[in-house]
Length: 418
Image: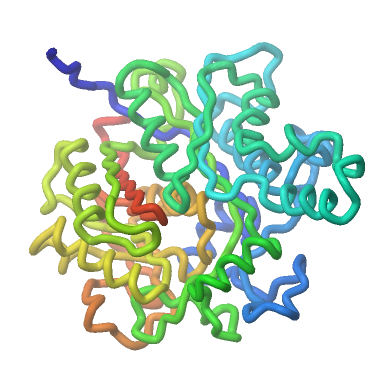
């Protein structure tokens, strides 16, 4: 059977973020360029019995013109930060967060943990006081698709709607699948991205027992991707939503173009539940390049997954070498988690926003806390200071437990798209 070859170009017309730095996109980008960490001492959770006391904590969402206090009161923090980021993205795109009628816009979001804080509270109530004392909205408030459903309902988006669960690659996979749907003509517009708010006792305890969290007592210096002294990741929270559109659709309505997603690759290591595999990651990079129709020699920048764990950073560095060959040594590689911490299922989407801004402004944010090179990590990691550089093509890597790999290719919004 002959396979249809997709031809529609996919552009980004709106972006919204919620991070420990706040929810203003310009402030967020300024912090990233300046190399300013958002990691601090945790205050929401009593960590006195934990071996770690730091993380990237998001404050509660305040009411906005498109989010009422009543709406926010019904939801878990995870849903609220995603709703806020989604509204900001719709406003940014010119489509608007408020609408009187349903709109044929799809919703595809990713999350690793969902409404984990709410679930912890529900189970706590059940085991301490019995089922009669559980919250009456325990199921709809904490179901895994609570964010995608709330985005669809609140902003009157009546296209297809679903949630991607691909661990820490969830946001990137959601964006990749949205890209494919637009490419193949199934949707014209998709609100997509990722969100996670996992800072609660159950998640911190689980990660602490895995022995993958940094024990560094200095919050701003704890996350140090690719540095030889790295000792683990730092859990953080955040949300990023993007409006993706078919180029012709965006042009007809006179939308501002923020960038183009040119390719997407996704693979499975098929080897181990927690240990990453360079071959699987390299295959995802190569798939993404093929999808974009470009060669390794055209790649100028890689926004790395860069978790700050010994094995992950070494494996990713090797995968970049395998996929890009001789070009790898000349590519600027940066790890946003050095400043943001690991926002889990939101990381791929949040770091994609950073990559889009990198292409727009020609500024590569630094990998901070990089002091002592690791012989096993021998790429150009843009240490400690931002770099001005013309970027035409960039990769966004997202790799996850379960061996899930997702890579997106971004193209500069050049004159051809204006």
